[in-house]
Length: 163
Image 1 (spheres, rainbow, N blue to C red):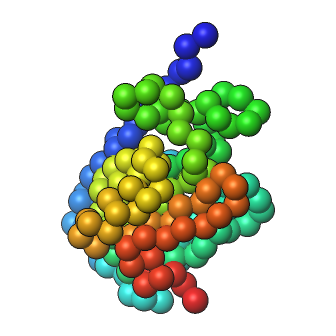
Image 2 (image 1 turned 180 degrees about the vertical axis):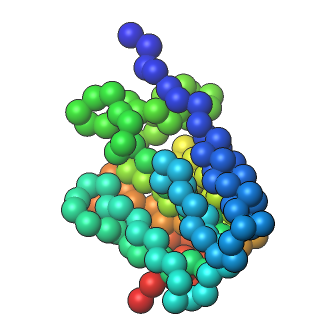
């Protein structure tokens, strides 16, 4: 049977950014979230804390300190079609199959649409290629949580961690 897919690769990030654009006329600072995509604006280092869910356990895998910018996570743990989560809503272009190396990729970028696009793109790449992809971008960082319990980072990830 065909595997169903969703078509929201960058849509949520774009909606979050549009929400921020609308709010800037009314408020000086805020945090906008839609389906896990987040964008902060007008904050300070002490203003916004964003948690990154641990997709295979309880609690958080990380807590980020965000004064402005976007955060998005792509992963296999919310929308999946089998118990092993090897068939899920993200597919690799060219193969049409769900990638199985990572459980999630969280990207931090200057805006939510960029974070959303980069988390999804990095999720479908092999981790060595994905890390290079993130590091080549401007103001990008990422956390890769692998299926085998590993944890990899790229870009300036440590700079956005809270503590």
